[in-house]
Image (cartoon, rainbow over all chains, first blue to last red; front, side, top):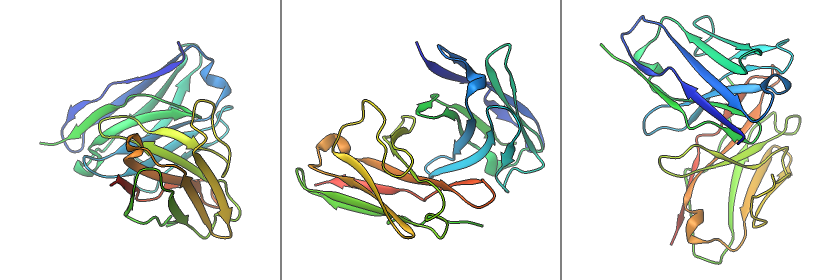
Length: 112
Length: 107
């Protein structure tokens, strides 16, 4: 079954760190560009970051630049989003997406 | 920063046609994508590269472009089409952006 499954969400204090994972099954992840997209509660979609299929490009939204890092481990068919210096406004459901395929999301809550 | 502009809401009667616009200065040079999202669910890609429809997406969904505006058309709207719809595109630096979304209400 072709799918993406995110994990790693949770509750973290402001200033803290969290690493999200997105594991692909049923296809080879490394052949495709992959995005992270987030959605704050009751709000619209916000694009977060992109990694190209060859990892030659890693592009970030201004709102997370310098704090978030996108990477992937091809041996594990897994994408990561390392999130540092988290702020309350980073609270959202985080989705990974590749082409037509989206995961179901993982919730990150930044709160003291 | 780059912005895509969508109407906040569109209302349509069953069987009629709904048109959702998305405007942005870079749209003549960058592809647009359209997503449908229902409450509590992940988005679904409806249209890619302005006009292409992934397999499994009903033919009543179509995309078009004219200048700085792209349009998602839903022909013969059904009750199940009630959802939020988002356009997405990129700017000249290959950063992506979503429109604020359009809530479609089926009367």
